[in-house]
Length: 262
Image (cartoon, rainbow, N blue to C red; front, side, top):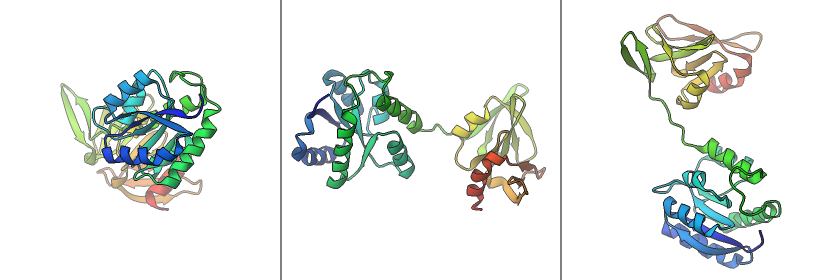
């Protein structure tokens, strides 16, 4: 792969593409724009046909998001994201050696991306498939997994006899693992067997639910009292009918402190 890099701009905002094209014009020794796309589906087709060295990629687009586009590619170019994501997401981009530009794109920030390109290009052969053994590609795939939209749960379905009951999350005090089973405990003192694992629940529940030990996920809105133990653990007393006490795990102490602002 040699400079200038063949480049495609993919963004559903005409003004954003126009601005990026204008900013890139004085940097012709680094990039040569060979095409533009105004949505994810159009971008996917164009990248597969033209096989560019580099794409500037918006994330929120109609038909296909930027992440969905990348997941469908058979050919992985270098990628610079245009993003309005929060600071957590931005750290993920940085840690995975994938660059990003916040809109509206500023000249100084674009120059930093251009410098990063010069550092990456010398270490990456062109045209590798997404599953090829290449650090850049591996990091990009890892980022895509991290940034997939989380499909949050809004209720938990449990079976009782011949019925299936939907439990609103507001009625749930905690989830608890007992051996290989996971139970959901409601605020009225009932317990039901679920088909979820605690790991799966931790990934899909909203942030009000916190993993506090290897065997428990707690609804933070149902914590009445917290007592610190000498070993760094905490005893959480909940507001459910049974006033359940849950001992947190030592490896989860930081999460509990952050939750309770301790």
